[in-house]
Amino acid sequence: MMAIPGVGPVVAAGWLAATAAGAVAGAVVGGAAGGIVGAMIESGVPEKDAHVYAEGIRRGGAVVAAKVESDKVATAQTILDRSRRVDLNTRREAYVTEGWTRFDEAADPYTADQIAADRGRHRTDPRI
Picture 1 (cartoon, rainbow, N blue to C red):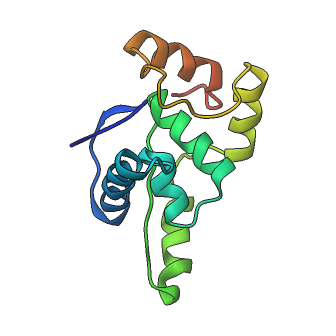
Picture 2: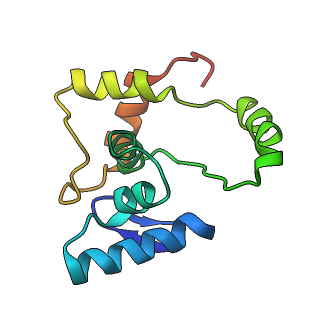
């Protein structure tokens, strides 16, 4: 469990959690981009995408990241394709339509009621 500014307490493990912890420490010391956005950028995620992912987490979503060897990328992609996932560009467009511009570390994490309302706005499958 770790606390990420603007996101709150999260369960994180592995390389992304270690990178996030280092990014938070670096931001405190040197004023660099920290938290989850900094960790994602550090791991190669484009900044504009990192902001959307971080906002999704703030709104109660989850991000699954896997660092795999190049010969296992196709297998990992097949596994991820079996899951219900969010289209990043569609979600970015929805956030922008609502007036969002970028992840704000100073913003409070969503409450349970806000999470439920947000999920209702973005639900694409009526069975869930």
